[in-house]
Length: 323
Image (cartoon, rainbow, N blue to C red; front, side, top):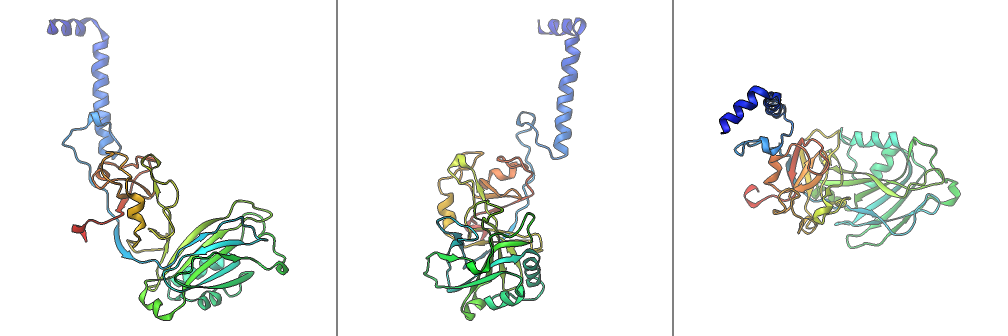
């Protein structure tokens, strides 16, 4: 009966030709898309097919002695801003108000080309008075108190001009106070660019950029990671001392990761968004979503959260057999 039905359908119905052509087109299109690296629906794939694993970013373990966060209360150029430094060693907090953008970028560039910046005096001399006002605070390793940074009223500064601006409102620099500590720690300075609202631009106070300078003359930009809210994660910054990726000017292919126990606490109980079974342990680059486990990451070329193309990934924690 089936043979008679197919013969009748073949002889009298154009739907047979349409069905055959459509099926051939879908299969051919899936094969072509698969060859060029596009995602193919799972139903069209073979179970034995294995996509090539993503390149893994090489990691090294380092300790970041610096952390800085904005304090409580309102902030403005006229009233000042509260900042809370948290340092593992005694350090110096330098607050440069109205620092020129081009000057700061030139100073950071110079650090990568031989001019070591590791003390308050080094930064003060390198900036060469291309700022409005400078404050200096001494911070002990157990000190968690907030510091009030403010431009004196007699300076008469209420804003930093129209957009686009030529000056950063506030640049906070953390450096190690003891000389022997600068020889022990790989990271010798932290540069934090902070936006402070004023009369012309009332965007709330926030940290814009964070840079870490090393004793080898390298510079890294500290960036937040993003975790899936569905798995109890946080959609904002992963903290100021957990992990960071190299800035565009960094040529090394290794990403330092802070030795912080907060990562194990922060990712505990957060499951992979794909299998919903294993713990989250993979960060995808360049979107920086931490959302998959070690097993599932090899099956995806696009981030399951934002659909951005994944160039490489790295592990939040290394297994014992990889160390």
